[in-house]
Image 1 (tube, rainbow, N blue to C red):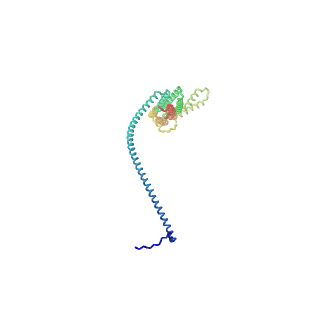
Image 2 (image 1 turned 180 degrees about the vertical axis):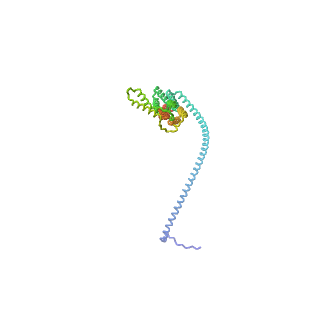
Image 3 (image 1 turned 90 degrees about the vertical axis):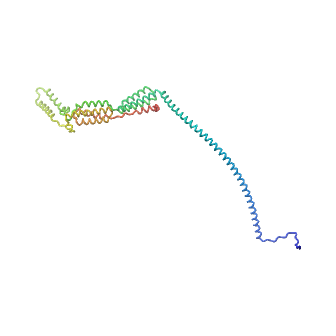
Length: 373
């Protein structure tokens, strides 16, 4: 082997050769990039360590959460079992309580019924004298009101109200003064209403019925009382002239008076009468009896209708009797005119009158007694 000759080493390092400017800048960028890479590596390593730590903590937390959920689920199951047990016990207790409540309600109902009966009994036993008086007055007024409605007369109601006022005046109780004033008001109102006096109407009907046979007809022959009236003064004048004649009087006055008497008698031989209904003048004498009986039956029917409080039927019969009287009887007779006027008055008076109700007195009694009856 041959030895290679080497140059002697210099004690000082040899100076590097000068570099170009572009190479220095490239090396600077490369160093910077290398530094950045190393920094990124350390950051990545730190993030990885942090992620591992966070994942470990998350796993621990999840394990703890699972254990907590498991414990809570176990507790929930125990609570559900306990709740079911309590629900069964509550249901059983509710059934027992419902049965007890139903029994208590039945007993309370019986107690309430017994209490009501006891209160009614105590109220009936402990009712005061004033309340008894008011109840008696109330019953009397209601009975009188029914009698007034049945009879068509207000006399029963007037009598009951008068007795009520007198009875309350004797008691002299301040709490009953209101009832007494109400009774006075109802008494004035009932008296002002008036009533149909059936007794008087029937008596007047009987009076007309008794006069039927004496009433002259249009078709009757012979002078009536009205027609005889003009001749009476002439006869009285002739008789007075004959009685008062003195000796030496002029015979001319005597002849004049005699002629007047003869003329008056002659005027009675021929009469001219205006007849509104020709069939009335043509009525046969044998039919006059049936006409009078028909009129009498009309009046009797009206009398029965008045007694039975059928005022419409009574007015209808009275109007028909009035029509018969005006058509077939002599209107110049005073008796016929009086009977016709009496029938017209009876037709007007035979109207149904409704008796007023004693509402003021009954309301005052209800207010004092508290509405209990």
